[in-house]
Length: 256
Image (cartoon, rainbow, N blue to C red; front, side, top):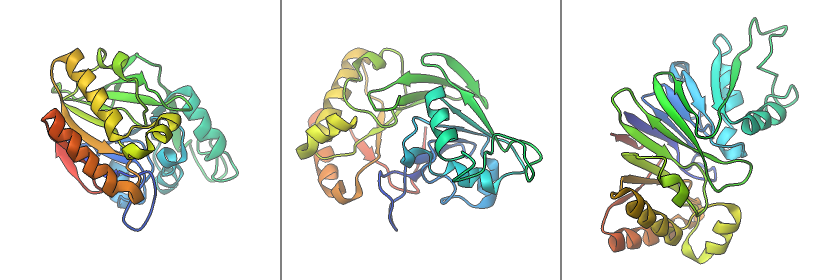
């Protein structure tokens, strides 16, 4: 299973992109930078898209990807709440066409919306996907994704603290999780449903208590203008917990 990170930040600039990654080049997870970081031929390889929630930085790339690939039907999987946000705010017939409908310039719908339910295992393009609620506004969800050879990742999406009840449901080889703020903004992180390194350390310690091991850890959704602080504090907690923690950058690939 090859994980390719397209966007690993929560703010967009010349050097930073919004949240999105690919699995084996065919399954996209979140879509903040999905179209802008891929060639047209790479976009055509995508068979399905998972959305963790409906905030703009996670769904931004959907309309552009669908617009570029109207000859095929793009399959999008998310909770009903997230699909409603997408349909009513981006592909709503005002900002972008209603790609879910056949119309004068579409011979068939260019996007297929598929609702996911919490804790219900789904087979999506050969991957087993378990949707798990996390602590984030507007129905944030995480995904455990398992390939045909049994390799697993768990992506928390945007999440705040309080993941203890989740750990019993997942057993990933790779954990991709939130690190949005430095410790001095702990209250902001908690109020907005995100993590800082201090909170992350507590969640990983609890994971080890519940599961008896620590998976490979990769952090995303960093605030670019605070990244120096976050990186230093992540280095400190990695030393304290005595295992390595990776911080993903745009273009990074992980093979598990």
